[in-house]
Image 1: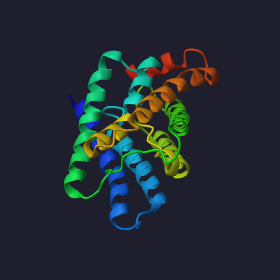
Image 2 (image 1 turned 45 degrees about the vertical axis):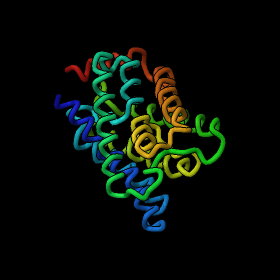
Image 3 (image 1 turned 45 degrees about the horizontal axis):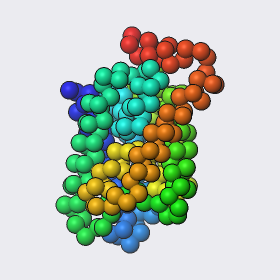
Image 4 (image 1 turned 180 degrees about the vertical axis):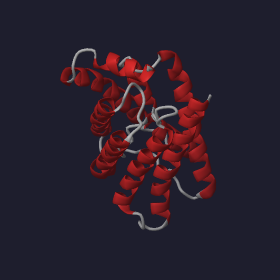
Amino acid sequence: MKRLFAESLGTFALVFAGTGAIVIDHASNGAITHAGVALTFGLIVLAMIYALGDVSGAHLNPAVTTAFAAAGRFSWHAVPGYIAAQLVGAFAASALLRGLFPANATLGSTLPAGAASQSFILETVLTFLLMLVILSVSTGAKEKGITAGIAIGAVITLEAMFAGPICGASMNPARSIAPAIVSGHLEHLWIYLAGPVLGALLAIPACCGIREPGCCALAANTHAQ
């Protein structure tokens, strides 16, 4: 239960700070700026990794949890509980933002600026790169330590910085589901469910291709110890 509470709390912080930055940027006529929004997402993930990584692994993302399980670094039996906890945290954050900013139409929902196919490909590639970094710097399903926090937070900031204006750079189904449902903007939600999951899963064979055989098994054993 502590691990589930940590995942819920961490995802709440991610969605509240990240989408909150978008909402407040809109409410303040651009005071935060796009760069500030990108930094907010990266910094809150970095902070949650340091705060919660040794408790739950600070996945904060259903695509990451699923990919860890597919790589053999995380139990499939724990996946439903983790995803449910992440969604609870995300919905709590979006509900709070709705109460604080009732006039905001989208609550930071991820919406494509161009063609849906363009954003789908971007989300897939962005999550692929993010998950490749996560697999490379994590031990088992744990993301705790100086290297992990800085590397993962930096990748999220970088990807949000250059791809955010086109696809929203979600890379996280929970981050997209909650504001979309609470605000009623469901028209492009499939992009932000399918793209991140596909990208995260594609990172597994890529990681295996550049690492020694049995890398994930060794990482899982290290985590178990």
